[in-house]
Length: 349
Image (tube, rainbow, N blue to C red; front, side):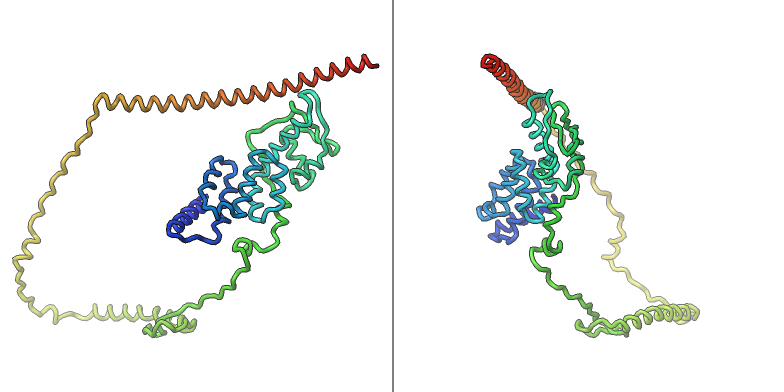
């Protein structure tokens, strides 16, 4: 987030001056937990100084990263059970992601092929994936196309679906149980200090006279001051009206003195000279060779991007082909073994 990015920059500025903060390791760990799906987060961890990199907070975040990216859902949810409240809240963002991968893994591991189904107890899924109850687990499993009936899940490779988006996250009971202290104490890392309310000071009395910087505000004097401020403008307006009504004869009968304008002042009224027009900017000139080099660079960039897309698509195709070939090989081996076992059994019998 933007706040953590600003905090990291502050940590770096202080580290350049040889100043280190006490809670840096904690917030470095939070930053790693927020970016578990980014592969370059480990590169950032390697740049930490040893005291922060080897701290329990950062080590926990790195272990959670390894569990999530290796699809080790058993280890991931063990980390959730042993995590602090704030760490568990951050790991809760990945619950549906790891649950989807775990359900896909179980569906593939407990089924022989695409034609046969396998019954798996629903309670085991609730326990392994930390669902709140059977209803929450049923809704999650139905979202991916599997059928739940009589307290069991019918695992089927052909029925498993992968929607584009994950289901909406729901409140976790296990994370809520970790909230044993007020939120303020958890965030501050200890008991909160009692804050006394600030008493404002006023440097003026009711007559608007300066009394110093150590006089406390008196509510009664404030009210009196407000009333005085309201009355005084009215009195000032009446004085202005009375002065305007009196004839200013003395001012009219007094002759104006002759004013001599100095020579220096005459220069002020001289006509203003027009500013010179700016000189036209020199337009850069490009030769044909420069334009050719730029065109080549642009063409190479486009070709590089296209080659990357083609190579990525080819790698995905090869990976899918390997996965399909492995599945087909397993099916063929299973069928061949079953045929051989039938022949051996018929000969023996």
